[in-house]
Image (cartoon, rainbow, N blue to C red; front, side, top):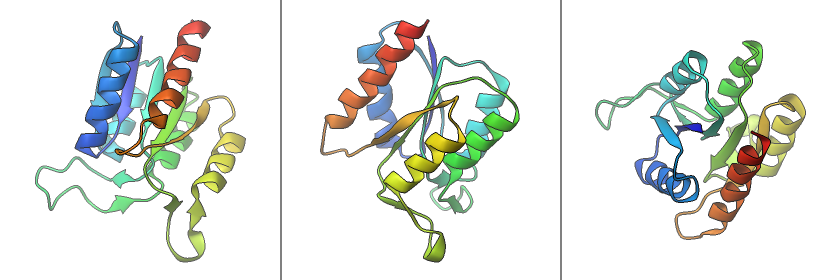
Length: 152
């Protein structure tokens, strides 16, 4: 099983990758840490699952000041491109934010999850709330991983 993790926070990425390795010992993990690198990876290769962050910078940061502007809906934009290109990859969003966007365009996490479920029915596997101080996200992610194995 090959799993793509698109995540810009180094600690969260490490936690996600570690949990996937513990749960799926034979899984191959590919990592990307920006909208552009994640989109490039998901369009270039076939993955059995993608673990996707929602908010991330446009580009890989070479220094702490680089990486371009934050995209509050980068994950949704990647889902749109995947759907537009008719790529069949299950995607689970793992986020540590409760709200997304600004002003009138603010969406709460549950509102965004409903929108994604409706718009990307064939590929969206759900949204998991991540917190470094909690472990319930691990149980939720494990359920997604096991379901993907059982489908194969």
